[in-house]
Image 1 (cartoon, rainbow, N blue to C red):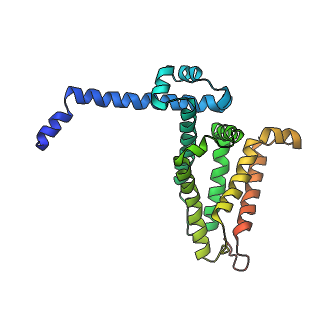
Image 2 (image 1 turned 45 degrees about the vertical axis):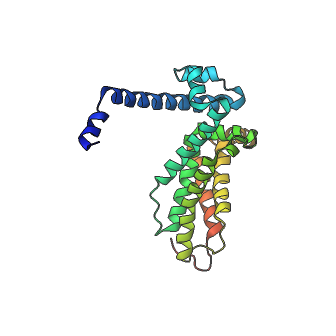
Length: 231
């Protein structure tokens, strides 16, 4: 078939209809996914109901089962979506590897603010921990996303080591755990900790103080004190 014939076929009414249907299907699926993120974050896996999600998505139960199979598969898709959102945002960082300490600070700052600004992410991860990651373990995509996130940190570590700023024996996975722990815990427990410690952990000044503190903690965990520079 000639190129002209191919072009003509692609522009037939039936092909245009198929394209519109595919676009509508993508929009419906995305609308369901966004509604599910909101409902699962609010009510948790156990409390979320398919009918409530379909109503929030301005759809119907049948469409949820058509696109996702069942509630468990929908929740797995939600987990993948919120992790992917985190990865996409992190990969948008303009890290200056010529200044690895600044780049490390940028990762810490980004992670802390992302948790603060995406309460649905924190809530969904908290709920999944209650289920001992039963759903996350079923997703190969989440493992791939994790390697992408740690890969950014790995580049910073490598740059710091090449410049002699960082110690040689840095375990990137453990460094990521350090960053994640110091940022996530504050955000996930800020209200109960606030009562327990009689502090307003939602106060912007206190949050900034904590951020500067954890930047110093993370820096000290990787710095080669023998060759520490003025950066």
